[in-house]
Image (tube, rainbow, N blue to C red; front, top):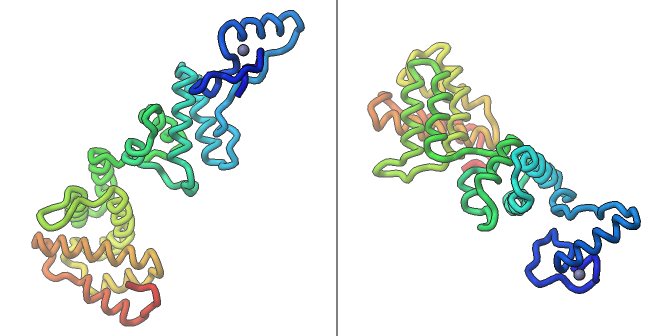
Length: 257
Ligand SMILES: [Zn+2]
């Protein structure tokens, strides 16, 4: 980049929105414009604002508006957009960004809380910190039938915290497992009062309606749930292996594990 007034190269390491080599050139350029009635040149804007990637463009625009509304300095906004560019690069639309990722990947010159604020405004922030996941488990399991809620909640908290035999699982696993068992529990609670009353037939009937990826996820989730419940003496028998054997034996597919 060269100075817009004298044309000399700008000093190395200049801010990206710098247009003049010094305040002298900037003042002269401004005098010249005033005398000749020339409008201000367009202001430098972050390239992300005109990016080809719709998600990044939307995020950059959100940062610009948020910064304007909250009085962020132009450099705070610019750096927040830098952070967004790193985090959103190559990310498929609709996949939320976790706070853990934001903390790990936001470049050092950008503010992680500002980046998180922008993503939250777009509905793209996932707070995967332990207290947030804990609160989420409380809310979600509160909607389950009483004979199931406590067991499911204890199970998810065990996954979250880990125990002597298993490492703590990620927030994503908690969300995926909970979402996979919810419809099954909803179905069983119509005729069963407690998890211990669920039979291998019940399990098989529920899994029979699923195919492909949802089926594999549901199998992993119920295996984990029943293993947990059995270990804690909350169910008498573990119907999961039987149901799974039946299921995979009946319809083996190439990508079944
Ligand atoms: Zn100059």
